[in-house]
View 1 (cartoon, rainbow, N blue to C red):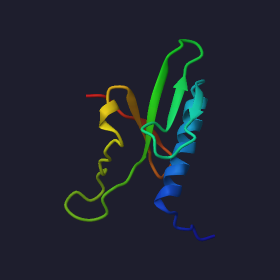
View 2: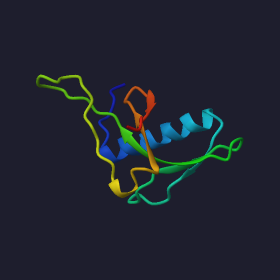
View 3: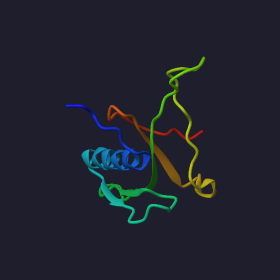
View 4: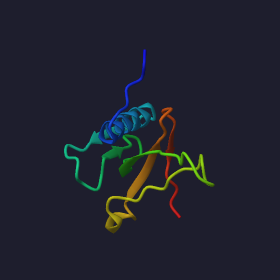
Length: 103
């Protein structure tokens, strides 16, 4: 069966759902955002430690041409005002996930 092309918003939605599964598999409680314009996509709560984190989910994209072909394309945060409290998580098209590292 031929794979259909998805719109960027559908790809983003799918990435968010994969991120939710990733966190649930780690034993975290996940609270999904009910709006699509806020600075946070989801909040996780660790029921053992009580740690709470805010997350912004990004779908990984790679350059298709040029001298940097195959390298990741950087994606900016939606809201740089909250950079210190919002963590990033990246979902690749193959479903692999990596958490962003703070610098």
